[in-house]
Structures are given as structure tokens and as C-alpha cells.
Amino acid sequence: MIYTNPIIRGFNPDPSACVANGKFYLATSSFQYFPGVPIYESSDLVNWKQIGHALTRKSQVYLDKVRSSGGVFAPTLRYHEGRFYMITNNNSTNKNFYVYTDDIYGEWSEPIEVDQGGIDPSILFDNGKCYFISNGYDDDGVSGVIQCEIEIETGKKLTPSKCIWNGAGGRYLESPHMYKFGDYYYIMVAEGGTEYGHMVSYARGTNPWGPFENYKNNPVLTNRNKAPYIIQAIGHGDILEDNNGNFFMCALGFRQIDEWMPFHHLGRETFLIPVHFDEDGWFTCGNDGTCEFEYEIDGDFKQVYKNEYTFANTDFNLEWKYMRFHHPENYKLSETSVELTGTDITLDDVDSPTFIGMCQQDFNMEVTAKVTLSDTATSTPFYDESGVGGRECTKSEAGITVFMCEDEHYEVVLRKTAKAYEAVLKLNIGDIKHEQNKIDLPTNSATLIIKSDRLNYEFYVETKGSQGEKKLTFLGKARTKYLSSEVSSGFTGTMVGLFATGDIKASFENFKLSYN
Image (cartoon, rainbow, N blue to C red; front, top):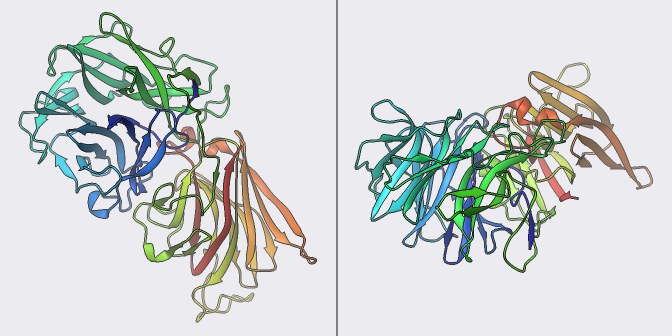
């Protein structure tokens, strides 16, 4: 059958996969969002279902007020002797650690730290030993891919950290993985940076400590010179074998908004590329060392994407994410509605606003929800028109946001005013915090709508007229490219979120997020 890339859409970068009990499991980065490190399961390598997270407790990971695109980077997922291991780095604390579980559907252990620096850690089990690999500086100050042997039960180093390879010559060496295939140990890395120069390179040797011989045609996989082309930044790969003896590489990449416009706002996604070994044991990727939209895979099944999300057909513990460590008392979640209680923390703050969201998975999107506001501080009135009264109300608002980071986000909100209510379109780009448009509303309830294509977001508010008829008002539009990583410099992707700030409660009903 023919499958289409990406296999996991939207903000799901740094994929790492393993095989266990006839199925495939995959983990991706989560950065400042919580729960951390989503875990996916597949029986065919093409259709993936999220089954949990590896980091679900505050004791497992530090996220308090970490910057956007900080937090949890680049997981490695491995299976050995009945146990799953997830190895990762908290870039905000500069700690490498791993957690484990014997039940992939259950809870994971408390973290075990390894006293080796660098980022993008990985492990290799071989001949009764466990090798811990990362990229950084070894114990003698030499930079490159570094390795030590560890005691897997405790994380204790059993050997000094030693630089074993310096890569194939590209800048920003990262994402090291080591494999044992046949007689050879293969060390594979990403180089070029996780942008338009991204690539995968490898070398091999007969000993896990080297020396390693570079593959003569490195990089083995890259889309850096494939233009004009929507898929770019292919890299950060991990290799696995399917049930038929075929090899594949899962790798991150992104889809830019247009062939001639180098901006991407959906985040880095997960792609799947066939791998072929020659008779001498060297491997190649894809048809020509690049990633295409379509490939053929063994099997008689259909690739299916989920294109409609509601409160009823989603799991708040899986698809939905919070900003850093949330405050559960401010969330009331059900199959029919979400009730959010606002705080003084806003979307502009490097903190934990009352926010719950999911990643935007495709360009053509529509999200809609009926929002109803109620005041939570009735004992103190708002200011009246003359400026006399009790408290400011301009932060008492709730709505739908498309959020890249604290500096770049758009939202359509319902706001409490001194007299009544209003709907507002807010655009935040860098230091510019702009209210693009607003209309007065007769009641505390309205339906908010965001539509998008590759180039623009459009914002609407729907109310009822005097005869009960629906009235749709266009508030304005904003360009997708200003939420891109090229503008915001982040490593995440656009999130579609529901939020509330200030002295209000907000009820969200009739929520639907759809792609076409």
C-alpha cells in the first residue's frame, strides 16, 4: 500500500521508536507542555494512536516557569527484556535522565539521572552492557558524540565519558543513536541544525567504542537542497525494523506554508522513510536520500487520519496539553463542556495560565466553541464610566487562541466590560500587543470561530439577532507566518487552546476542531 507523510501531524518532533511484542511504539518531544513526552502505538508503522505520556507527575520533571521551547528535549524510546525505557534531557536544568515502565499503558518510574552532560541522550543494550550516549563534552573536554557505560538500575557511570565520534563535518551535531546490525555498530546523528540545513549522517565500526568509518555518501538523508518543496528540515532520525524484515527511519521534518515561502508554523512533525541495506552492510534512505510525501509499504490496510475533535471524542489525559504545571482546581472537564477559572496569569506570561490545548495538525482548519462568561468576584464591582468603582476588568476574558509562544499568539476573546461584554480580536507579534477589532455584545455568551488555510487565520464571532437568527461577524485576519518558527525562533508548533484570565469563569460548549 501507499502511505502519506507525515505519519504524525503537527507538533511532534524528535521521534524515537522501538518494537515490542509485535507492535511499534514511538515517543516525541514535549518541551514546556505537560504531561510530557507523548507515547504512540501502531501495528503497521503508518497509523499511530496516542496511548499515554511518559512524564505525568511533577516529581518526574521540572517545568516551573521554563521558557517556551525549554523543558523536555529529544526522547529516546527503547525496549529491553520486558521493560520500556524513555531517555531524555531537560534543557532547562541541563540534566539527562531516564524513566522506565513494565506496562506501556501505565505509569512510568521516577527519573534516574546520569552524570553525563550534553543533550539528546540515547542508550544501547549490547552483550549484557548498557551504553549511554549523548552529544557534548567528554571527561577530558573533547566535544562530539560522547559515551559511557552505565548501571541501568541506578544510572551510575561504570566508565569515564569518552568522545567516540565527531560526526561527518556538519554543524550542530546532535541526536546520536547507536545500533548493532549484524557485525557492525552503526552510530547515527543529525547535523546542520533542526532547520533548512537539517540532515542525517552515520558511520560504522566493529566495536561500540570505535573507531568508526564514515558513510562515503553522507548525509544519508536530507531535504536541504530539494526545492521548491514543501517538506523541509528532515533529520533527527531513528531506525527500526518492521515485522517483515524491512527497515524504516522515523525522522522529524516540517511542511512550510508554500513552496516559495520558507515559513512553518505547524511545528516539526514525524515522517517515515524506507531504509535499504546493500550487500556490504551500508544503508541508504528513501529513493534518493530525500524524504517524499508518499512511499509504498507492505500490508493491506488503510491510512486513516482523525480529522474532527470534540470534547466527547477526545481524552483530556491524551490529546490535550497544559502550559507547564497547571492548577487542576481551575479546570472542570467533561464530555459536554469545559469550565475554566481565570487567574492573574495571562498568555503573555512565562508561567501557567488557565489554558488547555492541542496541537494544530494541518493547514486548513476550523475551530468553534460557544463561550459563556460569569464573574467570580461579585463582591467588588467593576469601574463605572467615570472611573469610580472597584477593580479593573480588562484582563477578565476568555476565548480561543492559536498560540506559538508568549510573544507570538492570536486569539478571539469574550471580555467583561464595565457596561456589558465585547468580542475582541487580539494579535500579539513580538513586542506588538494589538487589539485589531472589537464589537459590543448584548449578552455574556457567543460562539467564537477561527478558520485557517496555509497563509491566513480568520476570526469570527457568532451571536443571535433580535429574532433569534444567527449573526456572523468577521473580526479580521492575520498571517500564519508570524506564528512560524522563523519569526518566533521556537522549537514547538502552533497550539489551538482554550483559556481564561482574570476574575471570571468561562464555560466552553459545542467545541469542534476540524480539518479539511
